[in-house]
Image 1 (spheres, rainbow, N blue to C red):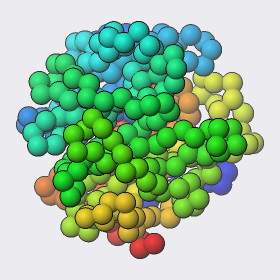
Image 2 (cartoon, one colour):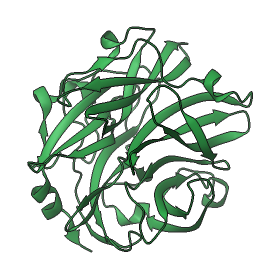
Image 3 (spheres, one colour):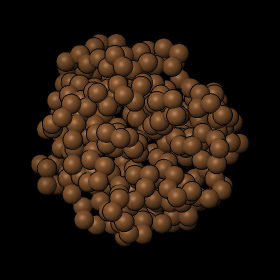
Image 4 (cartoon, rainbow, N blue to C red):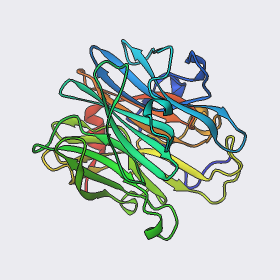
Length: 333
């Protein structure tokens, strides 16, 4: 596999579980599955819970005919047992306009488990928020207007309001090309959102030249809200990679700190990737190679941070780091 230019490396504070081998893949799924990735992970009711994206029925045209959200459970955050049927499907949405449901993120707020997700519709891409109390069904609370996705919720209210990160798609006003930034919105009830503002732009991230967006829900630390985000850069010299005829993008994970009282303020950020594609599962194997997408982050009581990420849009992997080392990476802006 030809290297992407410029070369990017993961931070030295990162340790990949089992050298980068997946913790979940299609072989672990008891129903039809091809690609298991971009999972949200949280602790809920005494267990680790993972909601993962499952694309299946590859059509040979660069996409899949089926996609569902599945659930898995773990006692240690490493070894997972998958539920015997999908958690959320297009049919569950009961809306004939919706054609696909995917990219889950999980956040526990005041004892309830909230699910952020994306849906494709016949009239645009929308971001959704739902709540589940039993991990058996989801009550959908809100869906955005097109086009918005990659939404994540903060795990508590700030100054009386819920806060979410999001990534709109302003193609028309950005010259018809990818140039997508990270935004944030506020709500009093998780249904109606506003006070929307820009948080982080592509030009603020040295290792991105195409788009950026939210990753996992932020984690509260004494230094600030430790926040993962994803970045995309394009290398025009690349051709066929993975299953696609042409795939010239690279996804990495970045890390930043947001102010505890006013999370619209970025108070620190690493100017280099936290995780860049390096292992065979990230650079050579899979549907779309050179893709790292962080969807879950858990701060353990001993200071270890578990970071869950999709690799090559095909498998789910795990990396760890010390919380103090992640904070130290976030240099003041």
